[in-house]
Length: 533
Image 1: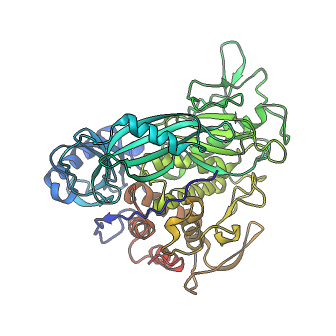
Image 2: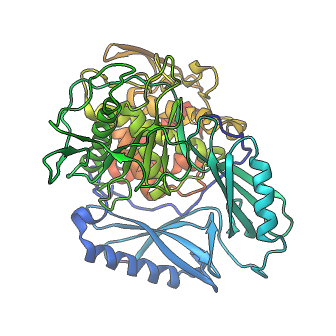
Image 3: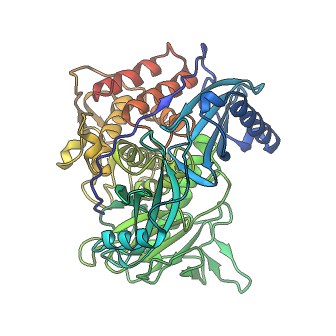
């Protein structure tokens, strides 16, 4: 799924947490599962008081309001409350921040996106909505068919300079009939383009009919005695989109899969049994849900226990998969119609749904280096879903989408082997497509997990170089992914770049294992090894 190249580089202005001993000895479970609603509400109330009390620190002033995005509470009671803000009723893009506070509610530090002081002389646009919508439709021509546009007035502050802007979403159909959208941001005073990016998060590849062999499915028996692919434990449902070539798919679209004997699919490639793709989709959505809950205590994509709607058979010959926030849906196509079946394998499903986790937490902007980090997050944690499942058919590895795109779509030990991804950071990385700039983060993850040099893991040979000629000793992917997840949910913001990711993961490693630990040292060494200093 090609995307426009965007020359945007974001960075984080971070208030570093200054703790001595590690806050927790191992990964702390976030939010309500341990803490309870009352503790969460208290943390939010204290965080709002801290923002008001330390208004200069947060750039909080007249005309602004706060909206709670997420809450993480550590085992020792330390609290991390994530806010978005509005200015005179308008969303502030790049104005998000995290309040870090002790168990008693006293301020411990902060992490901010680029915006600080937000004040505009006027919120009346010189360029009207109608003209903005027309220009966006013109710019989207060739990218989106049957398009319609919706402009929204915002305060654009992602580059550090607050200004009034239009954020216009153009929705329609992609080249294979799949739902597709483009977002265009323009200056509301001059009409000048600021940036544009895809509205959906996708991964490109081919598929096979069944990837994980015989699996147990959680289904629901209905009143008439038939069974449905409705997961009673996790709440997700799996539906047939009937190759809908419409951008209007939502949670009520499609047809729920049902069956008389609770035996689903035939396990064949290019199966004529439409339930075969649904088997993998339903099972792998469950594995993704279980991975996040078991490993991090995260109760669903948004940490609210809500299950997603999963569609198979989307579009015509659509060789792709994507996550949609607006629909809260996972969508998969049927492949290219000749050589590639459905894309519903473990790491691909984990990848796409992780886009939803990122959106619900740091909301890494899908352009520049922050976009590369967004894709790397999905590659890393999607791959960890595969390691968590430990399936004998789809053996865990560091080859992303190797089942649906053999021999692999992307790999971690040396990303440049795909001919386009970056092994090492450079000033030009932010200008790459986000699926290729993600190579820097993927390479860091492999080095932090397994170390540099030649190695065989689960029968697959790897040979990971370093960009500075150093030797790195890994700490294992369980620790490396725990550090990344905590960095994502506690320290990263919408405009975090690779340098900011280094700071965020070091803060996370310090929290989890201590500032003098081997884990902290390895995190730093792996970043240096990919030229992120």
